Image 1 (tube, rainbow, N blue to C red):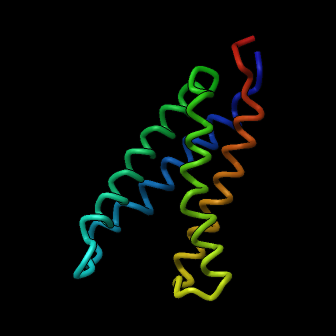
Image 2 (spheres, one colour):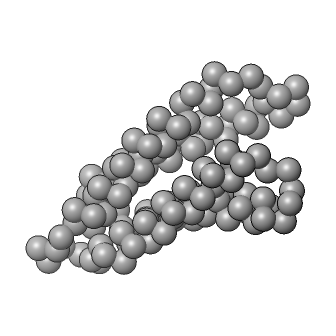
Length: 120
């Protein structure tokens, strides 16, 4: 039987971290324009925390979902860090959390690599 401790923990801890970081964003003041977009982003990101939790419950069964999970982490992290590096007005805290997302994306990729295609 393969050792699935790392994939399980990677996705479960990422889900817990995500809920802790995202829920307080609902309490921040909304911008005068685009508040609905911000709320939609937060809500969709919270839905993905549930997906991460499910993946962590059975990494072999949900291995195919790991690739969209990796993508989810990179579609925010990479552009935010690229804009920050080019001098765009990306606040340093946003760049910090973007870096965490890229690191989690790498962790998800490592978990995907360590998860077998089928149970042994």
